[in-house]
Length: 437
Image (cartoon, rainbow, N blue to C red):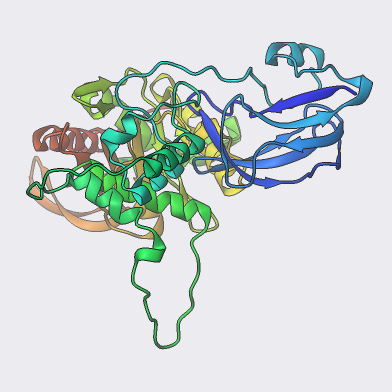
């Protein structure tokens, strides 16, 4: 009997754990090579994990909803004499089976040393909130996950040990106001059992939020609790862009096989302005400002379910209009067809949301943490505008669009936020209507 260990695959560069959503096989079931064994979730993206061998499932090491670190053994399969005893490293598997599309596997994780603030999964944060564990206390819990991260098992063990220790009488102290972030987190993570039962009257329908909507809700509340939001507004005359696109979109699609939307055109202008104002493209780590040298643009995309996801165009500053168009179209199509990979939503440094797609004039978007700014594009509408000419002022019909920038006031002051936003508007208005594609 040859037993093969199936490990949690690495789904992206910055993804260190995944949640088990569903097991397609149970112990005793036959599984084919590359047949889906389980479904997992990383942040907002669901993925299928295929079996790396054919055989009989002998053991499942995690249950549904368990959070599993990358590299941990999740199942064991009896492959008979046709398979090696232990799954080979990723490079060896790829060389031996180039015809398959199985995910790459890596060795079991090693407990890493850690210092300073760590990343915590939503599950760990929820447990901490329910048990009244502060962030300072959470930082002291030893982590056995990848890179020293605290896993579900770590925090539950800590809670169990804490409750068994004898209580120590503390001196009476005057109440101190809790930080805003802790208050907000406690409110979000308050157990449902301790909340008063709400009675609904009239003709109502109660729908439980799906997993993605719960993640979005948690992410939005934590963002508002983390960053003091400020929003600035401006408008831009995009008449030249509208006329140029109307004239070019046919030949562009015929030549490159890609539809030319407004999005990559707007991204060009935004990228140019990020180069001028690099502090817009950063994150905050304690008292350190981390300026990102790469410009990875996240594009907020609505899914058919009504949920929102933010696929990321990596190294957007290195791509021309054609490259941006290909990436925008590919990611949008993948999102609509539920084909996004986990890594497609990672590593964003600045986010753009097009609220104009749904007819909105403007919006006040919530920052996509840990970024410090997000730009909203409103609908393009024809309006009468006053234009200055050599012969005096005239009124003309122009294509106008509102832009709004929400930014983290801990890092981005009003002068920087307004200057960046004005720069984007100027870049759009100065678009060359005679440019070639």
